[in-house]
Length: 201
Image (tube, rainbow, N blue to C red; front, side, top):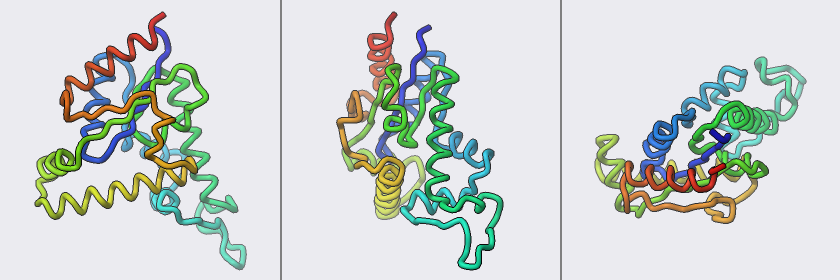
């Protein structure tokens, strides 16, 4: 099978993670979601609290005014640049190693120079996202709406920090799909058929 990478960016509540997992299963390739990528980032020595601050747009210096180091990762003078570099390197290594589906983490942008990448973005109407989040998290409409707003803000900030570009820029995607049209299985099947055409020998 030809080496292939499918990146899936998605709006919170649009079922992108479930769709990506289904795509990977149907193609028989590796699946990396946000949690798995985060666990790898932890393993290579980037503290989770540092990564969260960086992705929120906080610039973090590695040393205090007196030059004291704050933890192992703090030996780097600019933690912001180092954390971003580590995450990009992890995404690149995962893509190089095996054919795979990568959820989020701005992988579409990070891997933009490769010619074996299919870049998908999944979205849904706000009312559909709201319903999905209410059901999946057992939340009231008000709480689900607040959670979606918080996630949207965080994902936009994360993408801006990692790439310097707007998360909504369609020019870095090959296909935008409304998952409410076909559901999880139907959307996954559509992406698989597209991938087979794109990556055919």
